[in-house]
Length: 76
Image 1: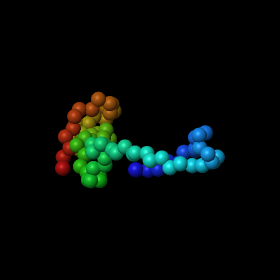
Image 2: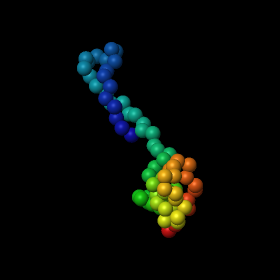
Image 3: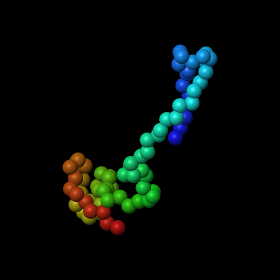
Image 4: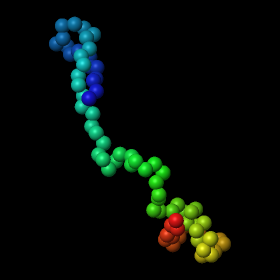
C-alpha cells in the first residue's frame, strides 16, 4: 500500500495542511509477469532466421521475396 499526499480541504482549520491518504496498488495478473526463464527457447523463427534455414536446405531461390515464406521448423 502506498500513501498519497493530498492538500487539505476547505473545511480544514489549518491552511496548507497535508493529509496522508492510503491508496491501494493493483497487482499484476500472474500471466503478465515475467517468466523465470530469461532468454528461453523460442518456438518461432524470425524472418531472417527462416531465410537462413531455407538457404541451408537449398530451398531459397536468389531474388525470391522474403514476404510470405513457408513455415520453417526450428532445428535444435
